[in-house]
Amino acid sequence: MKMTSKALTGLLETLSPIKRGCVFGILPHDNPDSDSIASSKAIYEILCSQGFTNTEIIYSGLLLSKQNKQLVVDLGMQMHKANWIYRPSKYDYFVLIDTPGTNASWIQKNLIDPDKLLLHFDHHQKLKGPHATFSDIREVGSTSSILGEYVKSLKRKDDQAFTPKKLEEICTGLYLGIAIDTNYLRTGATYLDSLIALYCLTYANKDIIKRFDKNEMDFKEKQYFGSLLMDSIKQGKTVLINGGVLDFPSNAYILAKAADEMLYCEEVNTVIATGIIDDTLQLIIRTEQNDLNYVTLAQRIHETFGEDHDRIVVNGGGRNGKGRISVKLSESYPDVQDQFKVIKDVLLGFNTEGEFRIPYHR
Image (cartoon, rainbow, N blue to C red; front, side):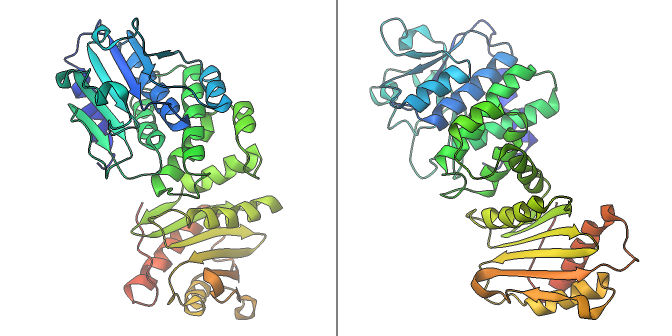
């Protein structure tokens, strides 16, 4: 299911006829992990924002790791272990999270009336699960990414939907849910996972992130990394990243790292990251395409931006899918705000002539 504003509208329309006094039970999979915990937190806060405050999170099994137990505490959550108090008959409606139902005890044991299964969010698309009134099931790296899109859309629709504290808790959990489930975007991550992880990082609690996050970038570098990906353009399997003016040496490193990391995404096979250092335009290229012509691309970029042909440098030559193009900027393009737009136009023209395949659109 492709996430658009219509998906949020569909969710809200599903909830609209439900009486606000009804009791909701949120069911993650048994022995919930960080993705299940974070996703449960997100849908819990979404439901509360719509007036469904009689909502509880119920799990079967155990919180197996100290990390997951600490995450529940850090996110200000209450998760209730299924027992005679927290039993199926207590709830009017159910939300199934991060499971196709095969690893959720109440579903397995047929303890839930199918008519009460209202919502279902999961990233296990290949597995068959119970049918809910409203479902969003996609093959992405984590369920947290799916719920993150709803949080983002709801905040855009209603900036008061979440208090700053609640938004911080939600985004801290979702970032960690995505990062841990995808090995920091290295395993099974998609473009969606990258974008939502970095969106959530904007609002996340950096102290909590530091305790969990073993990534080599510090928090400020992650923020810059996030801004690169949030401003990126993608169509098909190609991504174009705008680094702007690289004021600090570390930003050039992070720009290259952003290109490296984006290439891990399953739907991406070429990344071009652009940035300006002093008066030189840098294009960092990462690709899995064997026929990418770096020299022809460099010449076309130089024709548009270059001042002195001798100043064009092509490094890497495409070996192992890596390359760098450096072009001294002419005075005819002094406006940094326009340089990325012009680069897009150049690359589009390059594409239409069949010399270099890089479709793009925002």
